[in-house]
Image: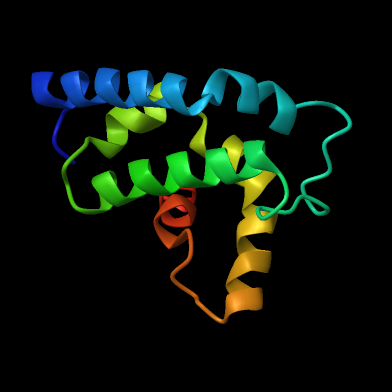
Length: 112
């Protein structure tokens, strides 16, 4: 694994800014709330879950293709914890649509 670069850091800041425009600051407290049930969460009806899945999948795709340092992302975000909260909703979507690729890069980033 190569160490993060200045370009990785610049992209990370851009992704953080994009996350703010998506509303990550509102989605995070929702998915980490004590009364949030990951197994009952639904990506189609819960905006916060859908936002976190899209954000995580985007970051996972960039890391998968070597465009962003995986090491830097894992130092920045608790990817495993995010996936634990919204991953069950992603798995339901895969089953519902019969598409195993849905959110696969987010899952791989969380497991790697």
